[in-house]
Image 1 (tube, rainbow, N blue to C red):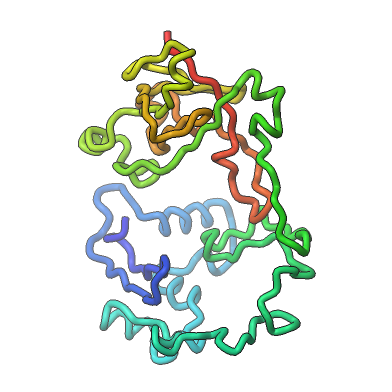
Image 2: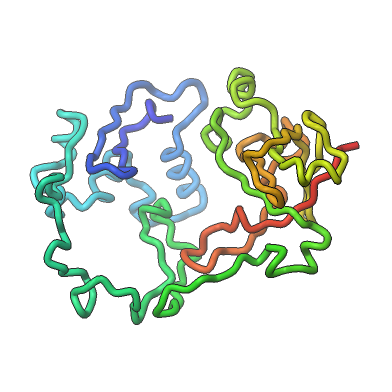
Length: 277
């Protein structure tokens, strides 16, 4: 889709804005995401002008071009040059807190913050404001234990004694491309990493098809016995398509939010593993 729209790529840890030129029209009946949402908004009768903006209008309005960091940068500049470094100083002189001047009542870095609210900045949520009620947070950082751990939920752990972690796959982009044969060949079929300490009592051998499950559902994968995971933990990467596999790791995930930011709790899940069939 990136070749089909005019766009700006925001920073993921660097100090540059990068311009994305539209190169081709969408083939056949395909349309890019922005146009899908414009058509959905029109069909559903939404009248907010932002939902009618063209790609260029989105770029003109969603970036504060008058901000000091954008001094000397505008959309025309990006179209001509392709990228621009934000005006936030260099590695030699960028010390915004050299003299303190933190945006706190004391001007110092404060561990105790009165009036903190549960909120995540819009750009990190694709400008989506849902599930952001901004309820008060404790003034001091604290540890909140996981909901599903043998230590915190021993009754559940009697049924499902293993924690599962579901990192990203190397061969897919989240779930994108996970239907393509050459990507599946590169990534491999769905696997489940398990320590020998946990595999032995369950009669699981390397390469066995196993079922990972809890009360929310289950999925299957090929067991890989390894010391790369600790006892009590299994690992299965995300991204596989449900219709191409016997379930996916998302099936066992809780719908509960984390304590801050209302983020998903993908790694707070107890499961059991058994040989399939």
